[in-house]
Length: 425
Image (cartoon, rainbow, N blue to C red):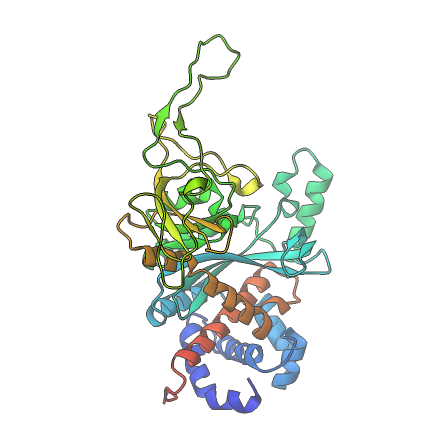
């Protein structure tokens, strides 16, 4: 925003900041919080402390102290934000996603050589995982966790005492609490869902995520154990069997040197999509519906079939353990949702979903694809609101900055959805 635009909306911003920052005990902290929000939303390429302070006409030490060394509890502010999002954006799902931040040095908490999407290769970066309350028209990142790789966890270094001691010094310097340890990103997502639904008592909603989470067997089972439905993307290498397949135990003589008898498998073998290759639906004309297997219909760009899901192949460390089977070897049942564009030789995208079996195809597709709204909001958070411009090297400071950037994005959402609302008295 330009300074003139900011002055026009400032009364609304002050009222919004007072509502969101109400849990802060001290008046000066609430005032600095509103100041920081203004700094994030004002025009300017960099949203780190010093450039923001210059645009605001204040000493940058005020902003630095408020974010990095103050004592205010960011989790209480996030709870306020989540309740606001539930009331104002009519969320239809919880979207799980993560975003990376390239970093030059090694002292910022969580920094390590990892694949960085912003760089398109492996490099030094931080990764933040978020839970977003999302609808077709808006989303809000209501909870965050900074991912700590194993190189930031002294308890993961085995018998290498010198390396463990070096990591402890590094953690102390960055202010990483002893309770913050290496956890897979999908476990961080489950932790946040427990906080959002349990501690904050927000409603149960379907969960959507990309294949980085959908391929993690433990993540899908964790959602089911919590009573949450989901529609998560999976890779084409994920295995699935038709719903009418029956478990069959292969012959076992008991003489082979096996640790245990063979477990039941399912027949027929896995198939990469619902239609056999010789029964692929023809490319439909615009607006037409192409025929798939007998009794099935296929809209122009996506199709569904009710199949049980198999375990994700362990192609990545996050793949987790195999899917738990029942006593008879049966796998849990879910939707396999497949997108097969008419001009493509094979399907392009896959989702597993536990949404109700009577869900219309339109609703299945809409919920499965609603996650893409988060990509738009990540761009706004990073490019316009400075989410990735934090230069501090403090664990709590990173979480406070991410919280304030989410507040700024929520206020922008408020202006977009109700731009002409009168300023509060």
